[in-house]
Length: 102
Picture 1: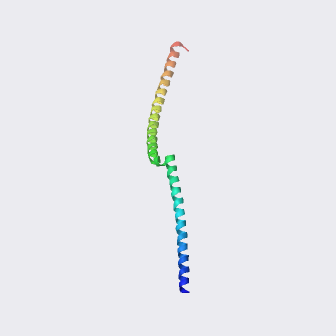
Picture 2: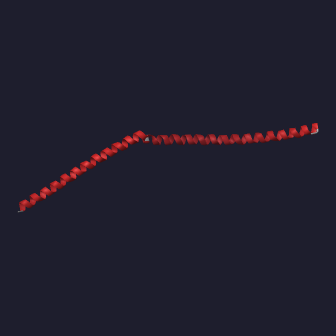
């Protein structure tokens, strides 16, 4: 009787161990396939180059900000010159009107 209980217990333990091992193997295969899919997708989309591209974008943004600052300074100088030219034009027109009587 004791021997049959021990044998039954061994059969249950071994069957459960085999079942767990098979489920674990299936899970391992699924995880490995998913990992390879993710790696292929990462390579295809270029996600591994993202930090380099972000650094390049930040550099370009800094260059653009510098160019914008230079453009604003140039525009301010142009406005100053334009106002001076317009003022000189008004003085010339008044002078001409004074001498020509118009």
